[in-house]
Amino acid sequence: MRAVRVHAYHDDPKIDDIPEPKLAGPLDVIVKIGGAGVCRTDLHILEGQWAEAMGPELPYVIGHENAGWVHEIGEGVTNVAVGDTVILHPQPSCGLCLACRSGRDMQCENAFFPGLSNNDGGMAEYLRTTARACVKLNPDTNPADVAALADAGITAYHAVRKAVPNLYPGTAAVVQGAGGLGHIGIQCLAALTATKIIVVDRNPDALALAKQIGADETVLADGTHIDAVKELTNGAGANVVFDFVAEQGAENDAWQMTAPAGSQFIIGYGGELRIPTLDFVGGEKNVIGNIVGTYNDLAELMVLAQAGKVTLHTKQYPLDAALDALHDLDAGRVRGRAILVP
Image 1: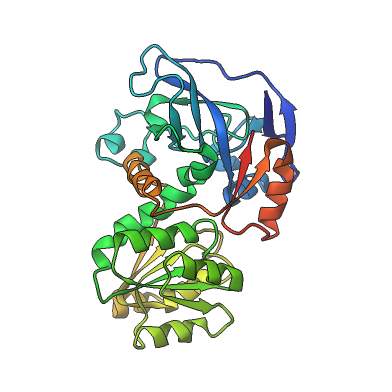
Image 2 (image 1 turned 135 degrees about the horizontal axis):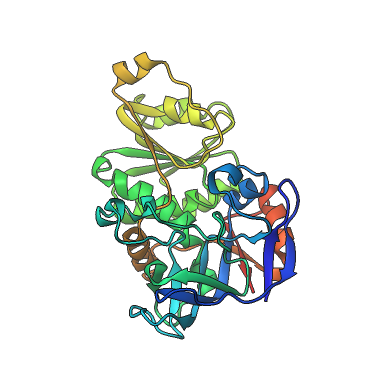
């Protein structure tokens, strides 16, 4: 089969012919990939940022946002059958550790992460995962239309879901960064809350899209955006700021846009948040980290997606054009999400 593999960090991946994956355990599932999302994390992988944390043996297949059709199942699989349309939680979990039993399966002690850890990902024709990762979809769902919800989607949804109790009518929420994750977060906020949604981005096209999908107000990040947000929130700032950027100073801007007793939800990464401790104490502000999401988060998100309340804005590429997709994403030429279709 054809697959996109990393051979060396700080270099482009290669498209190789490799053997198809085989079942290795009773709960394994082989999925024929119908769509694989191209994520900024893939760019970070190529830069070697995940090498020490995950320790994959090179070469290996990247791709952690995957959907498709069940091709083969292990003898112990009962929740899906051959031919089912599925989206895959990016981090298969064991179901037995305390984190799993507490409903925090994204923090599973025995999890693996195809496309990041030492397990081949889904930028290929087939992928091996487990039954615990499979969320069954309506059979008429096009996997390429939903694939990026497998990671970008649940990451955004997970953050919004946690913030819902703080976003009652009369509150305000800022979404900083209306790109691949942020445009999903905007729709989740519109679907789950009655808060005033303010979107901040430096790209006018991204702001135009934000208006179409649920933003009440948009603010151009031109150096005056902190003051603009304060003006839109009666001088206080937002009750919750969702920072989908969190680098190049945006993480510190987000803190300045957060109201007293408010919360800064950090979803993007790469920067460094520097805050005087007195600001924490005097403002009683919170900083909350967010990573991926649970299996239940993904199942709930797919209900919204199949009801048409959350849709992905995508640009599709054939698998053999994977380098074009990665380069376009890196250069900021992708609005929404890039999707590889084998």
